[in-house]
Amino acid sequence: MPILSVNDGEIFYEESGQGYPVLLFAPGFLGSRIERWYTNPSRPGVEQDWRDPIPLFEPHFRVVRLDVRNAGRSRASVGPDYDWSSYTADYLALLQHLGIEKCHVMGGCIGVSFALALEQAAPGTISAQVLQNPIGLSETNRATVDGEVAHWKSTLANRPDIDASLLRAAGERMFATDFIFSVTREYTATSSVPTLLMPGDDTMHPVTVSADLARLTRAEVLTPWKGPKYRDAAVERARDFLLEHTPEQPS
Image (cartoon, rainbow, N blue to C red; front, side, top):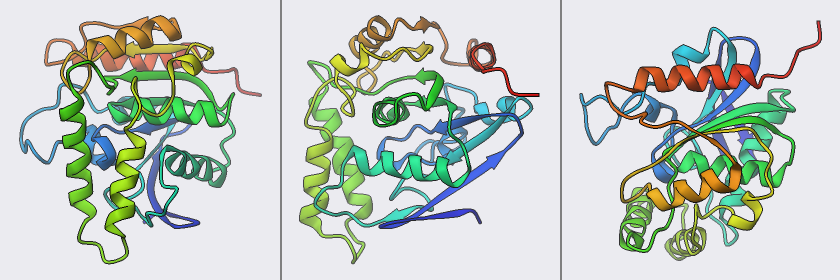
C-alpha cells in the first residue's frame, strides 16, 4: 500500500497510467479521498453527477490521487497551526517524492481550494487545471459551511491523539474567510494557469463563487456538465483540455 510519511503523519496515495502527470483532488470536503471520485458513501448505489476521471485519464496521463490528511487512509496530527498550508505541504511532499516538478491538476468541490492553494504556495507547479464544482461562501450558506465543518470535526473527535480544542480552532481558522476559503480573490486574479471551470449551482457550491472564479481566472466555462446527459462529455472535455495544455516532452 503506497504510504508517504510526512512530518506529522502519513498520506495514502495511488498512481496509474503513463505520461504527463495529473494530480487529482477528490470531492468530499475535508473528507476528500480517492473513492469520492466514483462513489458517495452517504448515497450508496446512487450514481454521481460526474464521471470518475481516472479511467479516462489513465491512457494519456500519469494519474496521481490521494486521501488528504485525516481522510480515508491518511492520518496526521492536529496542531496549533493546522490550516490550508498543512494540506499544501503534503501535496508538495508527494510531488517531490514522486519526482514531479510540474503537473496538471483536477479538483472537485474542496479540491478547487486545494488546487489554488498549491499554485499560490509553489508558483509554476500547475501547468493547467480543471476546477469542478468549487465550494465557497455566499451570502446565504454560512450555516451550511459550518455544518460541514462540524461533521468533519465529529469524524475525528474520538481519536485519542487529537486535542478537541485544537480541532475546533482548525475548523474555525480554515473557514473564517470568504470566497473559496484557501486563497483570496486578489491572489486568484494574478494566476495565469489555463483553467477549465465546471461551475457549481447549489448551496455548498454557489453560483456566485463560480462566477467570480470564471472572471478572475479567465477560465473556459463548461456548462451544463452535471448528470447523466452531460457527465460523459464533460469528463472527455476535461481530458482534452489537459491534453491541449500538456507541455511537449523531450524526445
